[in-house]
Amino acid sequence: MEETHTMPDPVTSAVPEAPGAPGAPGAPAAPAVPPTPPVPLAALLAREDLALRQIAGPAVPDVAIHWAHTSEMADPFPYLLGGELLLTAGVHVPRDAGPERLDDYFGGYVSRIVAAGGAALGFGLAPVHDTVPPALVAACEAASLPLLEVPPRTTFSGVARAVWQLMAQARLAELRRVTEAQQSLAAAASRPDPVPAVLRQLAQRLGGRAVLYGPDGGAIAEAGREPAGPARDALRRLAGVVRPAGGAGAAPVPASATDSVGDTHLLAYALGSGEGFVLGVATSQREPGDHTVASVASVLLSLLTGEHQSGAGAARSSALVRLLLGAAPEAVAPLLEPGGGRWVVVHARPETQLPDVMAASALGAALGSPLVDLAGDVVRVLVPAGREPAPQPGWTIGVSAAVEPREWPAADRQAARALARARATRGPLVRHGARPGLADLVSRPDAEAHGRALLAPLAGRPELAETLRAWLSLHGSWDRTAVALGVHRNTVRQRIARCAALLEADLEDADLRMELWFALRHGA
Image (tube, rainbow, N blue to C red; front, top):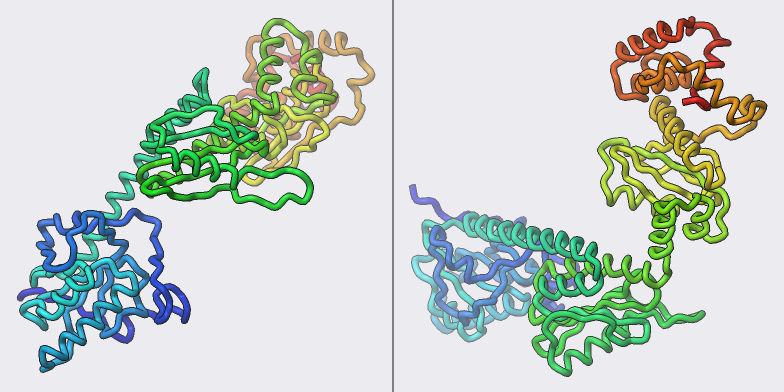
């Protein structure tokens, strides 16, 4: 049996907009653009499986279809958002109406579709009409509305599915383009000339001009094809719109702004450094993903200009070089935090997955320090003691005691043990205890010598010493030690038994446990 068009109930097929909303009677049409690229009408007409044929209206190649909608309402205006391919089988057309009445009917019908922002009209040839009414063809031609003839074998649902398929293909292509652009921008930011490299990549990806304006409004660096004089001047003025005015009581400014001069599209982004740097972009066309690509570039340039302006990046580089050349930690610490005396070391692991560079940087920002190290499955952060680390959602954290820079290595070990304890106890954050204890009664050299002597039988077996340390810190719990070390509980039992054999010691003895704990803290 020949398949026919499905015609929805005219009462329940759509919900009218609120009065005054776009698409409501009396309101100007303002298409609500979906978060997917539109489909060119030409691409839909090129689908051989649909066999659609345009029989009226201008053959404009850039007519954009945002969605397909079926309606048999005599006045579809209240139910259109704008940008639709409206599909109808002509059920609403008056029966036995004369030519003059049909001319009036279709004239009003088409004018309402145009007023609502409809992009095109598709008329099905079955089951109601064998041909497209000539009066409808004339009305669409007069109103410059593309009219498509939908053959009997093509269902409206098939047309709608084709629209969404083409949208999905366009969306996938756009995502691929944006992803490739993000990767190239990130690679450019790591070059020796990061700012010009990022601008060159941005201009190439968008096919236009990219300019970095300084706080005084002058162009610091630029790349790409230069636009015509009026557009160039307009872009400089647009950059001034988003540049902070500064001073108390200054009016807030937008973070971004857009404009156009002729066929040139202009964008301006205030960079996050807050010092008046602005990214300006001029392109001859505007693709859906262009804003995302430009936003990525603005974030990278914000980081680059922020470090350039504050000197923080140069100071950190200087500190690193001095450490590598043999300077003592206490000598370089003022470069990292002017006026900072004591520091804490933070070790952190995410609860669900391995950390990446972006997650590590975000954690450092949350803790208030850019001194971040991604070391395998643990993120280490060096934080000035005045910024007390707090629990962070999704992270398990260990925090050392506050120490002087010369004690950073010891604090690193403290943070590692605190993290192991936090993981074993399933707590969000554990701090290393800093109150005075037995270690204060013994000099550091004596404590280290005693620890090395006591633990000598475990020399060369770091896994045994680490297991013994975790086991003692968790009060001899096999299960919690296994969780902390990420091994099976039987492995913990075997290692502890081996420690007892090598040390020739009864590990159930509380006094001996205390001595071993002291030795592990100071001698290993």
